[in-house]
Length: 182
Image (cartoon, rainbow, N blue to C red; front, side):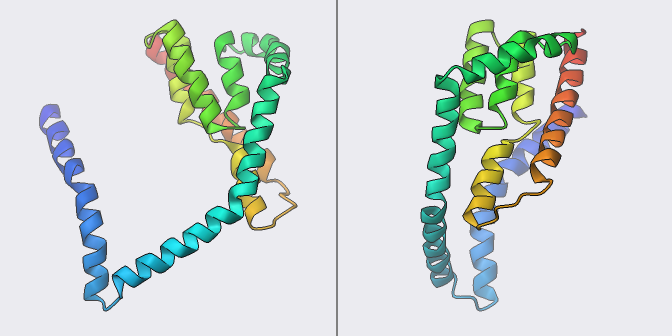
């Protein structure tokens, strides 16, 4: 029964993207939409948005690189270790907890390095991998999206998003601990 379900899902997933890529233009054409012209206009608008957000993207990348290179991340990880050790978080994960809200690329790079060093079956590597999809790059998202549309006052956005990130990590911690039998 389970093999049939897995085979069915695999067969459907193989054809979903081609169906979407073909289906949307056909549907638009049938409704009288000039599909190619609409696509080109949308691509032009996308280029304008990319140019508009580029300064914010560079600023976030620079700040993340500065944070890592200056030793501030190592200091923050060192200061957080007593709290994370009490909570049962492996010390190898602490830098990831700091990096993930800042930069997805930096946290993914750290996770790949962690998996290479400790092996894919280790508890810290499993927790790092699950954490990658359990919470978001809060400061990156807020800086990029709010900055690109000119919003200066984020009100409760960052606090709410960080609480959501913490909840995601706690769930990842519980799930991974159960998977590993800890």
